[in-house]
Image 1 (spheres, helix red, strand yellow):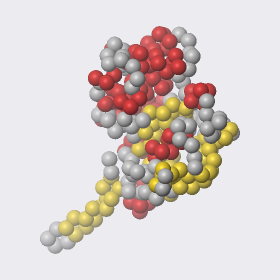
Image 2 (cartoon, helix red, strand yellow; image 1 turned 90 degrees about the vertical axis):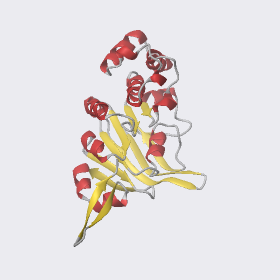
Image 3 (cartoon, helix red, strand yellow; image 1 turned 120 degrees about the vertical axis):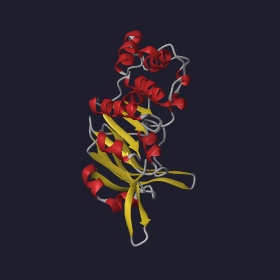
Image 4 (tube, one colour; image 1 turned 90 degrees about the horizontal axis):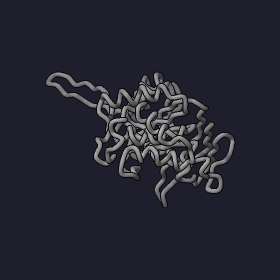
Length: 250
């Protein structure tokens, strides 16, 4: 479904992605791991057709993705949720927010679709509320609902649990696991990553892919996790001895 070949991107003279190559199959769920600044967000924007590669190639369903090929039909196939949900809020009520994307893509039965998706996401009581007045976790739910409502084939989620409390984070994990669409979740939260998928792609601080495989094996490779700045070694000094152990980054 998604194929990247030697993908590279940079902002003026600042490198963001360097030679990334991987494939993602239809219906597959993948976690994209890396520290802040590694290029995860840039990669999701490339996959969503918001940015275009400066180097390499990107194929979706066998067709090359570039400025000429990205149209409304392509955008309907891929939904992206940014880390800051406020940047995606366009309307004065939750109901209007969900309905907006449905109308944008010319779908019918908008009212019924809004009712169904709002119930599915547990936000039916918020339909008349201004989304800007909601908590961070509720905003994420609303924007995610507005994306899932038009049934994209791929869902790209950028640090989706950053503003969620533990209960909402648990709901989010269950929701992702129940989805039949392809889902790519960019995060530096190893605990969330472990629950979402068996496959992890890791990008280091040099913006290169350093791992693509089973997440269990990744978690056993402390040196690689440390290299990616996903964990750090912490030294304890006592009166008669010292020892080291690792800390996860959240």
